[in-house]
Length: 176
Image (cartoon, rainbow, N blue to C red; front, top):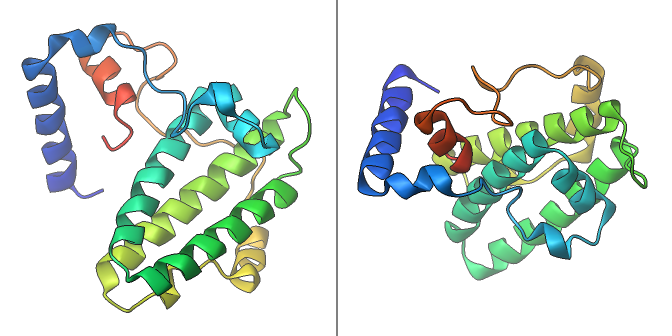
């Protein structure tokens, strides 16, 4: 995120909070979907960890934006590719029944972040559908370079325990 994007994000947070201070009283969403309806192991794992849920929200928003930028036939291809990617994540990260291991949760989170970074960059390229598609061969090459057992901090504060109104707003809006 460039400095101008970060500043723009801060302004957006301030505007949202000024327009509706009650945002601070709303619970932050746990994921991009209703966790009460989570059925798959990956959905249940996502709902079990707030940081993973926030990564899911960002991924969902980026994916939706990219999906809208394509024609219906390309949307169908991207949708099928996304399903294959998600199935791979479940296998790659050894997602099983709860309780989920920290290693599995970190792996899922890293995969979500790699995917939304890839999708976000393909949205700007104007190169068609190909750069947006998950490639299992490239994924296995990156696997060797990525330590999925380690979790790097994603924010300068803990979204599980926000201490100011601005942190609450930021945690509630995964785009920020």
